[in-house]
Length: 290
Image (cartoon, rainbow, N blue to C red):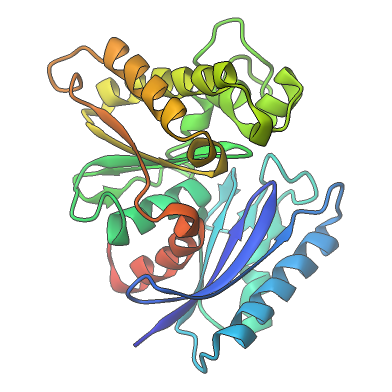
């Protein structure tokens, strides 16, 4: 059985793990994303977590390394520039890990990584058309159409967090006004509502759900999709209140015959979704899946 070393890079924490080809998490370790931080400090955290994950797994052979990172990025060159991690701009993450572990390394956006994990092992297993989303510190996603994960010109397809949902909304980290990420992410809740997302009121949970439903409705009608699986600490932490509000908004705004039955549901992989997704980047690329 093959095992994959996985790295999940987020604005709140980095996670490292070893995952089997069946989607079982053999080991998992995490550490908070240092803020502020230099490129060297961030790399040292990633390197340490990956070595620790291997040591704690008891696995003697790693087939490849999979990475899910916040974007944007340049997949061809293996460079990452996560909006929520200013210390990394065009950081050569893929080549750094290749040199450290002498292994094949596969990189993708964290939203697309979750999409692969859900398609292989989670709520969307066996589904040919769906979107998976992360609603956490930021908001990202991935799109599967006709059984293939969309990449786009530089590998950034699926950035649903930058769909505009509010004409006179908040300023986003990307520089635009009214992006979904600027209205409903954990960062937006802290910045514009003045509260830790874990302490969010019911009204804030509903508002965030409505914005997500609004963004999803546009995508459902644009791409002829009826399944949206959503994970991330904000969405899963807010739970039923969030998902009910998102579904109401989606149903109210997606009214075409092919989009009116669209559903927004929690991911099937739960809190392990990001690390399984990162491993799925390597597994899917090696085996020609998606």
